[in-house]
Image 1 (cartoon, rainbow, N blue to C red):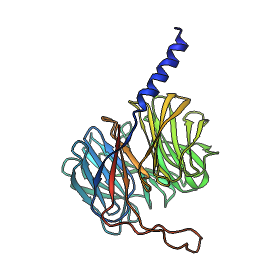
Image 2 (cartoon, one colour; image 1 turned 180 degrees about the vertical axis):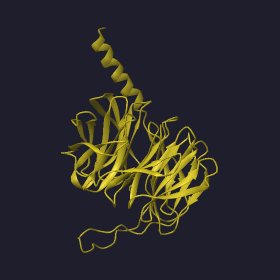
Image 3 (cartoon, rainbow, N blue to C red; image 1 turned 120 degrees about the horizontal axis):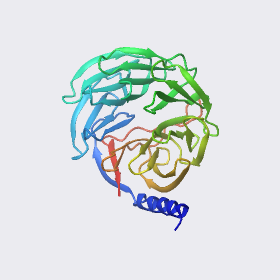
Length: 340
């Protein structure tokens, strides 16, 4: 067997091992009939942080039990969590109109609240710089906070469109989707100056994002019902494949070579295998639940966690002609656990 045949065999075996017949294996009920956004899995600390509009709910990844809550004002809108084990701190993005709550990872007690730009959505910690980055949709910019001091140390220029999600390469760059302009921008993590701007076409409304840092590939879920993979050096799109509607999260499991996209419009989890940095195979579409649009992966076990709830009939179309979402069914909010 020559080297090429051996490589093809390894790719085939890897994809076959990855396709393990996943399904919903558990549901963790979370009290509270209100909205949600991102989940964050702290695989090392064995905790799952679940944004739940007016609070951050903390779940033990091993037992599946709720172990704490970090409450916010009832008018706040909690979005995501970033974790820094070195400082022992966690960071929560809030629309109130725009702040980051800093808390103690061990006790979950609040330490401070820092004003950032309006409507901070995604939030990420970068171990290389020791900074926490917020993607401020309302202010159309990125804010950097020093994790150790809790002070704002940099802000980007106006990015001229609706910012959405972001990814860090750990090598001095942060990538940000500009959803309203169908572009991807690459910024310097120290100065927050824009280094590159690339079109995401044919991807419309780029939303969720993660990346393979080892091979510098950026994974983007598009509201136009597609996924794309972008070369982080050149901006070239190396693959473009269909997925379902309503994508709002993507996460790369580097240990297993799997990329997960959650589409809440059709209630599916799309599982791709990275055969090589430029070749990706859809190995499975897992039925989850309509509204399950955000996810987090436990990198220790490979389990996937998704927030979801049941809703009643849609309301009558409004002035724009679109149906409104029905009322949330009381007691239906839960975390779906997907595994083999």
